[in-house]
Amino acid sequence: MNFLLVLTLIVIISVQSRQENVSLDPCNDFYDYVCSNDTRSITELNFTSLFEDREILNPNISFPNNGTYITFDQILSPYSLMMWYMVVKSMDTPTVGSEFFDEATREYATKKNNSEKFSFALENLENLNLTLTNVFYNSLYANIEVLNQLNLPASEENEYLHHIFDLMKNNTIEEIWSSSLSNKSKKEFEKELNKSKVIFGLLDYNNVTMLEETKLIYETEYYRLKSLLSSNDLDTEIAEKIIRLGATDTATKNLGKRIPGYTPQFLFSAFASNMANEAFNQNSNIYCGIVTRSDLQEPILTIADTIFVLAHELMHFVYPFGIRLLPSNVTKAANKCTQDEVKMMGDSDAVKPIDGWFSENITHEDLPNLLGLRMVMKMVARKSANEEQLKNALETILSGLCIQGKPKNSILPNHHPFEISINTAVRQYPLFSSLYGCRLGDRMFAEPEKFCNPLGGDVNLEDYKIKNDTEDVGGFFNYIMDTANAFNFSFTN
Ligand SMILES: [Zn+2]
Image (cartoon, rainbow, N blue to C red; front, side, top):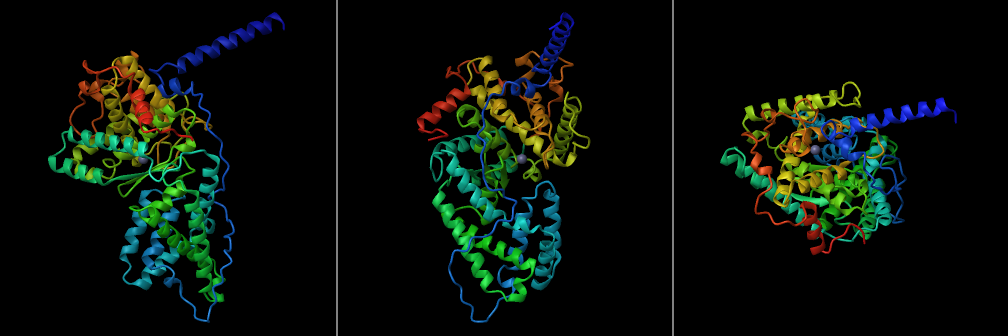
């Protein structure tokens, strides 16, 4: 190697390391600061795609027909057909947001009688991709495949994770009660939150036999319905769609007998989401799927991910579901404050998101991150004996959330890029700048007078600080793992 080349290389290396140092400043980009050290090894899973037209197995049961045929509306009522159309369509997330369903529901409500309602449902169904109607069947395959690959502890309801959920739920109720909302609103929120339940994807009801039975019910119903239609009807694509939705209806209702307390639509969405790193809050019931995006050999990071996701979903009770219980000046100011923060964080990121990344209509996804992180950091403070433990917990939470295998600031359907939303929440954690020594002018520094207040009132710094009489249990996640041990819980067998 000649001298000039060596010199050039040294110059390049030193420039690169200087650039790395800039991006590794917690006061500049906390997500990068934590996630550049992400060494988790997430298991690659192989499973059936939910979006392929897979042949429905014939269970070899004969359904003799005596020549009497049924009509489409005898398979599913107009209401059920419309409902399943919307549930299945919701899997097509890049194209549909909540406005889509509001509009469809409103229009359906204007139809006067059953036949008008059924025609409207059929019209919508015409535009639904045929393979999408196969989603539930494919998801049963995929769930069975994934469960056979992961060595998860078998359980109906995972006791430890449900204990964590109850803890988070109680803290959410506490957050509401310590806010400046009216007593009437607080009581309403408490009632709603107390009603809520959760399913932990692949960790609750992870019984392969139950899923195989559900698959057989689907197949049997599919071929039974086929035998009831005339050959003319059977020749149409719309018949195939209705039959699949009819089989979905029967199979999910049967699943509902095994998993009581949830609607067939919720169970559909839950089992279809088990492979997709998703979580959602549907009519006060929460689905939390974290197994397929986590490194199960790193239980602390996996549980940190779970805790943050639960906090986010629980805060959806407020934004957007509970905004009617908040004064409009509070929600207006909170939306504006959060929008300004998110926009600033996106526009000032070293990695620019693609043009058009920002939308005011999806602030209700950033607000739960902001509220959720604040709540979790208050919980952390109650189990921390020093500032190092506060910082460790914050970094543990972020480490559990790092996205792998995608370019930074990738566009997400109906959400702002995750890294931007999460950095905004960290910036709005009231102790962040003092813990990391960030100053006015630093990207992650928020002036205290500019803290957003999504529940009204003002930020009380004392809520986030370490209490003098706190016993040293080694920090929040030590406490969380001690609890896991007490429940004899681990993510793998
Ligand atoms: Zn959300």
